[in-house]
Image 1 (spheres, rainbow, N blue to C red):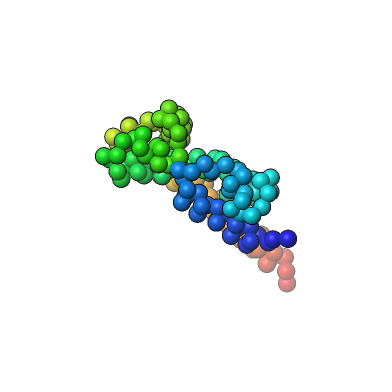
Image 2 (cartoon, one colour):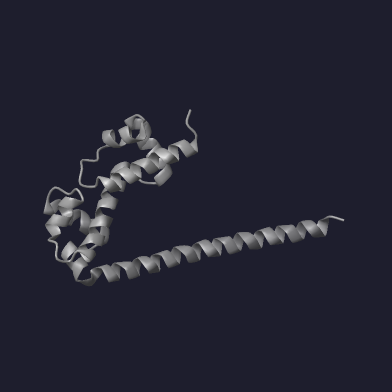
Length: 154
């Protein structure tokens, strides 16, 4: 039975494969073959290790790469970029892009990417503030417990 490291290595191999083959058909069967496990088992292990389904991961990676290319290759038509990352039609690409980033690809190119990045930074900052607060509370409780224990021991 494979251990966690083995599964992690298999999933990492799949992630590398996805990034190298964004313009290919990346269905569950082909990704499971890359990991050398059954489709059912692959889906379960992938979601357990990444927190996303394989389909969601592929869609997100395609959108992230397209977003970077829209900014890096400003002369390339949006349709060309969409096709290069595996979307088969401009409508499907635009719908997915708007659902993920909240703006159309053309607005992204015209500067909406900066607003999106600023919003994400604020959200991450809030998340980390909450993490720090929880850590501080846990540390405080632990110190309190330790001092109480010290008082009760001779």
